[in-house]
Image (tube, rainbow, N blue to C red):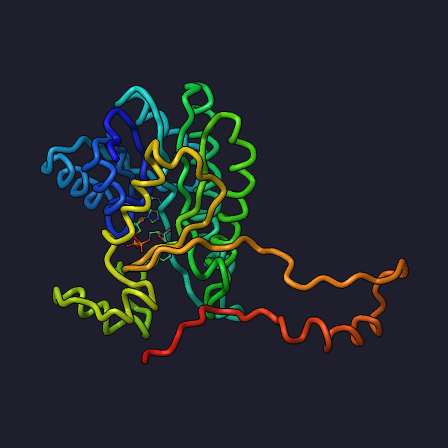
Length: 301
Ligand SMILES: NC(=O)c1ccc[n+]([C@@H]2O[C@H](COP(=O)([O-])OP(=O)(O)OC[C@H]3O[C@@H](n4cnc5c(N)ncnc54)[C@H](O)[C@@H]3O)[C@@H](O)[C@H]2O)c1
C-alpha cells in the first residue's frame, strides 16, 4: 500500500498515536507535516522520520483556530505542493465529574478536539476540492464518544460530535471523492497511562513484555503502532470506496461500529403518544431493549 507522492498533515503527531500515524504514513512514502504544540517533540518526530529515510517537516501551532488550520494546509502546499490526507489527531484530556467540571475544562477539550477537527477539515476540504483529485480525511473518535465514560463530559461531547461531523462530511464531500472516516483507537500512550484497569498492561508494554490475549483481543489494547495500519489503509487508494464509517482498532482487535439506529419502533393509531400509552407499551416492547452505557467488556476467563 504505497503512499508515494501523497502529502499528509497529522495533527498532534509529536508523540503517542499521532507520532505512530506520521511515521507509518512516511514509511509508506507520504510526505508528512508533523504538528504539535510542543516544539521539541515535533522536531524529534521529524528527525525520527528523516532518520528512517522519510520526508517530514514540523509546523508547531495549537490546533483549534482557523488560523492554525490554515497554517497547516499552507505548510503542506508550500513545502510539498499539495494536500491529500488530513489526520485530525491532536487532543487533550481534562477529566472530572460533571459537578466539578469548570467552563475552562469544558472549553479546552471542545476547542482542541471538536473545533480543531472542524477548522482543520474545513481548510483541508477547501484545498482538496480545488485540487480536484479527491482526498482523505481521518478523524479520531473514542469509545467514550460512542458509549460514554465516567468523568469525561467534555471529551464524550467532543468525540461524539466528531463522529457526527464525519457522517455529515462523508455526504458533503462524496462528490469531490474525498472520503471521511473516524478511527476509534485504543492504545498505550500518555493519555491512557493513568486509566486504572489498563495499568498492568501499560507497565508490561513499557517493560517490553508481551500483552496477554485478553488485553490485545477483548480490551483491544496494544501499542500505538498497532493502530497505525488502519490510518495507512484509510489514506491509501485501496480505501477509495470507504467513507462515513467509524472503525475501532487496538491491539489485535479491528471492529466496525454501527451508527445510532432505531432498535425498537411502535406506532400509535393516529393519536400520538400520551404518557399513559407510553407507560403501557414500555414494559412489553422497550424495557428489554434498553441500551447499556459505558464500555462493556467480556470478563477474563
Ligand atoms: N490513547 C488512546 O487509547 C486513545 C483512545 C481513544 C482516542 N484517542 C485519541 O487519539 C488522539 C491521540 O491521543 P494519544 O493517546 O496519542 O495522546 P497523547 O497525549 O499521547 O498525544 C497527543 C499529542 O497531541 C498534542 N496536542 C495537544 N493539544 C494540541 C493542539 N491544540 N494542537 C496540536 N497538538 C496538540 C500533544 O502535545 C501530544 O503530543 C486524541 O485525539 C485522543 O483523544 C486515544
